[in-house]
Length: 317
Image 1: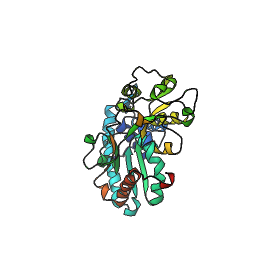
Image 2: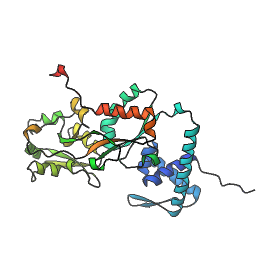
Image 3: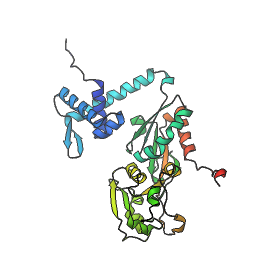
Image 4: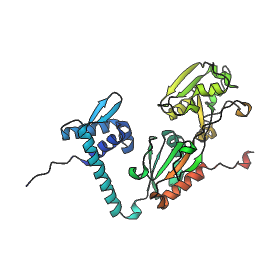
C-alpha cells in the first residue's frame, strides 16, 4: 500500500498562497492579519517541507520559481474548493460577513473612523477590510464590496458614485497661529515645510505640490523644507503634528477639520486661480451574487448615507 507524503499545516499553505498571489510578503501579511516576518517564516517552513525554493528573492521584488508556480495553482484551487464546500454546508445565519476592498487612504481616513457606527446599527454583521488599492476580480477574490477611486469614465459597470474630491492646503492650528511665519496667502508657503505624498508610480497629479503651486502662479516658490512620505495617511499625521503643510483631500479630511486637528489657512474663495480638483471620484461596486445578501445591501446603503452632504446645523448659524 502506497503511503501519502505528510501534508504541511494549513496555515503554511494559506500564507504561501497569499504571498504568491500578491508577490509580496507585506501584502500577504496585511490580508491575513499577520506580521511580515510571520509570513516569511511560514514560506521558509514550507520550502523546507518541499525541499526546494518556491520564491526567487529579488531586489524589492518576489517571483515564483517553477515549483512555486505549480504549488500555487494546486493550493489556490484546493483552498477555493474548500471555501465553497464550507459555504454550502454552513448555516446561512453564520455567514454575516461583509468583505470590502479599498485604498489605504480611504480606509484609514474615512471608513475606519465611521465603522463603529455601522457595527452599532448592525450588531450581527462583521466587516473585513482589505486596504491595498489593488483592483481585483470580486467574484474570484471572494470580496463583496469594492470602493474604487477612479475617473468617472473608468468606473466599472454598475458602480455607484459616493463623492468627488476637493484639494486644498491644510495645517495644524499651531502652525497657522505662528505669528513669526504667517500663513495668509499661498506665497507665504515659502516660510514653511511642504509635506509631499510620493505616489509610486505617480498617478495623482492633483496631489503634487509643484502642480498646485504652478496653478497658483507660483512655479518658482521654494519652501523652507520638504518632507516626503510613501503613504498619504502619514502625510496627514505629520500635518496634524505641526511638521508642515499638506495638500488635504475633502471629504476625507472632514473629521480632522471638525475636531480642529487641521485648519485651512487660505480662503479659497479669494483665489480665482485655484485649480480644479481631482477629476476622480469614489465609487461603490457590489459583487452581483453578494448584492443579493441583505447585510451587503445594508452596508452599501450605509456608505451612501455617510457620504451624503450634511445639512447645516441651524444652531451653528
